Length: 402
Image 1 (spheres, rainbow, N blue to C red):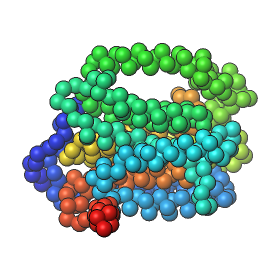
Image 2: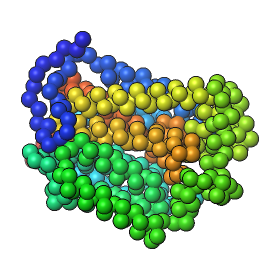
Image 3: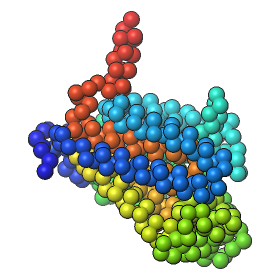
Image 4: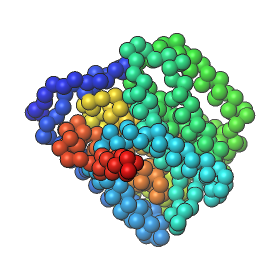
């Protein structure tokens, strides 16, 4: 039984009554997230070893995991949520600058211009934009509290910021990541009281823009991916090949799977992009329905715990940030799994902690670490020990004063 004490909350204008209680000593949410994180890291590395036959991708992912674990503990135990709140717009500006640089001098690979390289490090800033979208949305509603429902005229600044992120990512081209950033913000707005008329206007405008995008903005390969959702046999040797091979791999796993490194679709290299977009197909083929169900349980438990952390947050920033980070992790899992099962177009969304990729891996670790930071804030632990961010701010203020 949790011991709680009542406290005042500044959570205004939302659809949830959050922050009425502060837990005192029980840290079971932090422990649960740590256990889930550890299990997913181990399963992800094991699965990637099988998918790549232990080649350089696997050893590169080991390095990504080491860096990610470091960021997980840094954001979880050293950086307080109030520090993220203070520097939210600065982080937004920094990430947007990186995204703009990508469009100018970014590295091109596979027909996409998404990466930049600096001092030997190669990264994909659009992955950091997912966390940034959650961060600036939470910051916006924290600094623009209203007792009444929000109208469109109240949200123009937020729409401009998320729109800028979308506009900088979409031309790479990367519709999947750009769309995820918008969905993260929309998920947070769903917990805020918005005028019904404004919702209708936005929904109608979105439908019109989607029609315009289909005929004027989408590339042919993007249209084919969407059409293949309804008929994978439309282009079985081209755009539909990925989905068809993925379904074969998943189905052949049956109940218990073929065993570690025994998947024929994977080991005989029929399955494309088996180390990135279709990494879940590898796991389902080798470990069957039982293994796939385990991943669903782990990601479901992660989402539940994350939402509980958000529900018990003390203010609008931490609660909405928790909701945004939960949406980020949940959407990536659901969309990737749906892609693998032929229920969603192939849009290049990675499976958190499974798919190969440094930037994606690190952004997930930052998100999970930040959720633990929010939980520790709920427990009042950041009041007892000054975190790294508070010490850095104090040092900066003293330096500026001379």
